[in-house]
Length: 541
Image 1 (cartoon, rainbow, N blue to C red):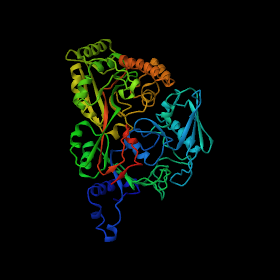
Image 2 (tube, rainbow, N blue to C red):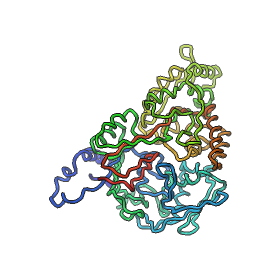
Image 3 (tube, helix red, strand yellow):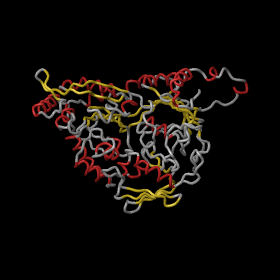
Image 4 (spheres, rainbow, N blue to C red):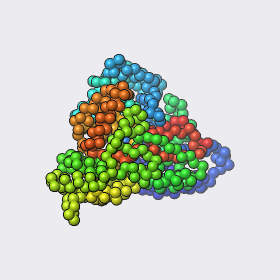
């Protein structure tokens, strides 16, 4: 398959790609000589994904962007598939008794693609750039209201990087190991920007197991093995990421044999997936969940807490789990702390489905004139009328249709807009951060504190509801500094109560993640955040 070095040739590349994907290589090449036929076939893993939104490592939050970047960059610390931490570019670390100093010993003999050596200055550059670029993970690591960090990092010497915190943070290591924190070269003039010079990919300069060799916008990205990789050359000769608009097309390509690995298969396609011959279906319990949320800032639909409560009473979470997942999920409590966190999860009675109570609350808001134009009288009854925007992920479009029908029993009428992932999470007036009523896909996180720090505390980078609650902020800060599991569990229980009473979100259920690979794939372990799946030990037989 040919890959075009200029990303602006995407249209011609797309036509060629569509033909090449399903035509045997020997036909494309016009046949092969006898000597060529004896050469071993290249081991190229074909992976199906949704289209990319942003490819900056500090900002790419979703599975496709993370997988694209982790092929070519390394982490200081790895978060394994089971949520445990493992050294990577750091060989180990020490934490001071007061919890304010983290000292990382760095691996020697590591080089970037351009041949320069990895050292502590690269660590400093990477983490300071997370702050200057406004990466959401800074909230988990520690952040002031003005966006500045409550920690600093310096190179003690070439092989030692030291982080100094202003206050203890029980989750700091998870921030260091976050999916955004891939180590970059301190000599980078630009990061993941296509060059107009002779080397199109000179600014894609990592220490990772694979090297970007070809990229066709919205179509595919091809990586070749980094034979000089510090961990040893991968078993694969390369990895090709193939981008799709929808899950059905991705499944069709997998069924045809054009793909070796697909992730995030929605529930309505699982039965078809299970019928694919010579394939292994992978299921992992996770904290992955859809968030239905209303904006709460001044003039928004959810500014009045009674509207937030009405949406909760109007939603039958048990029925949604049955209809959308055949009961395979775990019904949620309308807060992001799910059962995969063990003792930190606090199952408790939430608001039950009660359409009549929802109607009463909506009518009260209309009577008080606090509905901000979204609550009006129609045929003698108070109702909410509002557009509803949904990112087309998993079965969430189907869930949105169920909600649209279900909510009408409570006099909530929504105009449904299901849009592709790469559109919903891109810039725009009706993207996930701006729309008044939306449904967002939230993937698994290694610690529940990350959800609070990036989405629900005041000033959080991804606070899509614009919600601010002083008591939640206080408790989240307290949880951050609490290492004892039982004590932290009690804090999270209080936080769950705040979400129940005044929170701006509905979480119908926590869902497992379903993926599949061809049986010829070996050594693949699905990560709970699928984009972090590690291909270094993967092979093809």
